[in-house]
Image 1: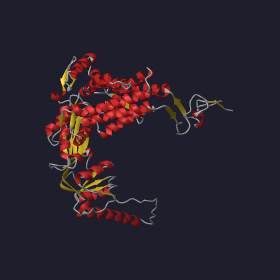
Image 2: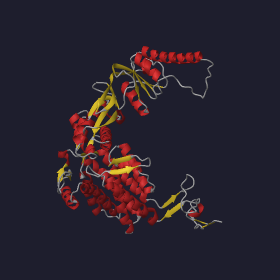
Image 3: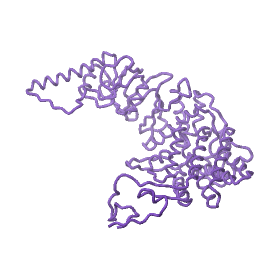
Length: 551
């Protein structure tokens, strides 16, 4: 007979069996901050253009070789509540601006780590939270004064390329010139009349292994890594019908059995099926369609008649790919194989199948000055490298969208963080209340970002930080870290074109500060029992019992 351990009176006694309850600073904050510091320490080496990559294998066995913080956090299975909040903050930053996920993680981790020191010293949580909130407001007030450049013309190729180099180069250092040119060309191609209505989903990426990055290009229209199904491989002035179903005779929805009494009945049944398929293909051809895109299996009989009537057939099983294709050619997605109307037919200058680096692709080319969809064809030696290039392209496209809403740019390479840190330190030194400790620690947290950049670049951190701080105190607010140097050196970020989008820094500071202040206000943690049935069997004979149960 099992005898349960008595539960202490109070809140735990009212909760369901299996619920874990934690209270007090030691259990609610310090233990969770330790887990947060471990996660931040792991991601710190990924920060900056010279950050290290991580090899992540998710629960499905898929391998990710990346330094992108959002990708790493998305694939990790986290259970600690603070770590989950960090991931949520990174996902929010990625969704809003497309850049600055590592910035949010490192700043939030530094704020929590500095808060732990103050709390252990006896500073009340209320005063610490007030100090962090005051420092955040002051940093946001100072941030517009640090803006050093404005993107005046979002259609100017050279200006856009110059503005995107830092964002793209932070993921793949050394290739920023080529990648920023590709991103700028693709974004300008699909930019509508209203620059604020730019949609990043209009830019597709086609990864083809082989060759080098110099072989990459931007193509107007859509490029699909697949082959045409029939013998027709090229169509000029294409009229396209897009079907979200298999291309062939409709299948029987219910289970049924056909009984034939003779061979003649079987032959007549097959002939009737052939006539039905041929009639469908003839109706499609009479509607003027010369290209068919199917979202499912292509029936051999339907393909035979499509070849007879010179209709090009392409199979595209991705639902998102079908929607992008409809957007690119102006077609409507049809749910059954039938002759489309004039409004449902898409138009394209040409559709053809070609070979790029021993890979067959189908190209829906528009060949016009403004294209509804553009495709960046990436070339690289390995798929891991292509994945890194794809992440850099995505970040560059999202930053271009952000610049459409706010075209201001801030000095990069740690210059913005150091400038804010110096000014907040001055404010904290002269603030009369106990909130000054929170302001000073906020200032120190901002310094960890340029220090991490120097550390990942292999530079002497103390010398670089000392030089930067002296020059910022002298009023040189655009001074940043020179990454490619072999010794401690600084650089004028505006002259070198090392710029960061204003909104990425602005929202990153807000997210990191709010997350730190929210966690510091937690007084109790109640963790419910996990669902999902009994635990797996093990050596313990009481494997299905809770730890607080005794036999």
